[in-house]
Each structure stands twice: as structure tokens, then as C-alpha cells.
Length: 287
Image (cartoon, rainbow, N blue to C red; front, side):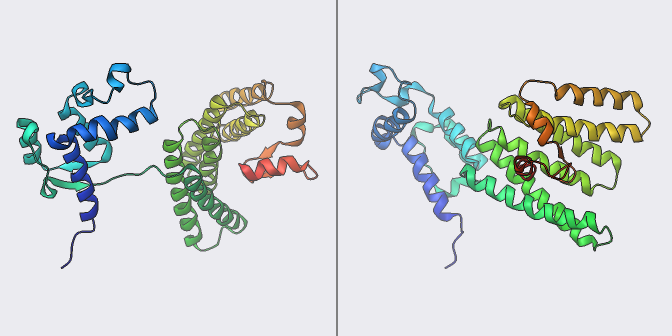
């Protein structure tokens, strides 16, 4: 007999909901298992009275809200009829598998795993973009494949940022996804959009953790945007962007030796001058 692939997961959810609601299990679950986990994660969240094993932890919250929050955070949906019945008589409600309408649980992946997926797709895309730039007459499938890889990398970087929201390296590396997309864009408007997104990501990275080469990356993107504005006849706006780029290179966190040896051409990911120090090539590969 065939069974739904979700059946084992639904059984786990039903069991957990029963632990939350069933009065016969409530004391053991709330006052022992849940309290132990709560104190392990947040040692000072409960006072001495609440930490006592005799104290009923469920009395601190509305069980209806607790279940609603659990369903929302777990991305589990109960049938409307079951929810109505539950709200009317939650003290005597028994959860069944048939009460679960659908589920879309999400897990928090390990940061290095998602970052590795993002970088791997980005590296493959970089190779295709380089080949496409060398020979624009290559089959269109190469450009399409590069765009798909960049979309995969973009999604993985989003997941990475959700996992570790304040990591400064994520937006810094993520910016290269938009730099690569700008190379594949046929329309100047699309190219400008991706360059501006890359600029915002470099600025976000620098705001979270100023790095020695952050201002150099910001300045280079500003110059690329300025050149596009100048081609469109917007000389005043282009001059303003060039002035911002020049000012960025004078700000703290940009040591003189980095200005001299690590000026990177962001459109090629290579040092602008041959014979540069190995450090600059390392930074170029990191972008």
C-alpha cells in the first residue's frame, strides 16, 4: 500500500502538538523537557520560582497562541475546520493526522555548506562568462547556462544571509554575482541595475565590518557606473560619482600599500597592472 512521503513528518508534528495540548502529558513535557531545553538555550530567561520543577510553565502563555506560533514557524497548515474546532475547545482537542492540511518545513542549513554551494555555482558561472566575453558568438546556451548558475548562486547567498545575517563576507562575495550579471546584460539599464546592486552589497559589507579593500571595491564600482552615465550624456552625474570614488579611496581602512598594489578591475577580476603583488591577485579571486 502506497503512503504519502509526508506521512512520517506529519506523525512527528502531530506528536509534538499532542505534547503541547494533552493535559495528561502537559506536565512532563512543559515542566521537564521543554523547561530543560529553554534553560539550556537561555539560562537566565526564568526566575527562581519559574525554574522550579513544580512550576507549571504552560501557565505563562496562552496555549492557543503557542500552537499558532509553532504552526507559523514550522510552516505547517491545519485545515480551517480543525483550527476552528481547536480554538473553540483547545483544552479537550485531540490532534489527528487528518487535521494537517499541508506542510512546507524549512531547516536552517549549516553556514559553510550553503556558502560552498553559492561559491561553487559562482565559480562555474565566472568561467562561462569569461568564455562568453572572449567569444561573444558562442552558442546562446553558454550565456543562458551562466545566467542560471548565477541565479542558483544568488538564491544560495540569500539563504546564507538568512542563516548568518550579519556576516560581512557574504554580501562582499555576493556582489560578484551582480557584477557577472552586468557583463551578460545586453541592455544598459539592466547592466546599471546590477552594478548598483553590487555597490549596495559592498557598502553593506563594509558597514558590518570595514575591511582594508572594501573602499577599493566600492570606488571601482562607482567608476564603472560613472562611465555608463557619461556614455548616456549625464556628465554632471558621472563627475559626481567619480568624486565619490576618489573620496572613498581617501577614507580610513584603505592603507596606501593597498591603493598601490591591489587596484582590481572588477569587470575582469584581475589586477589592472601586471607585476602586482600576489596579495592583489588573492583579493581579485575573492571578489
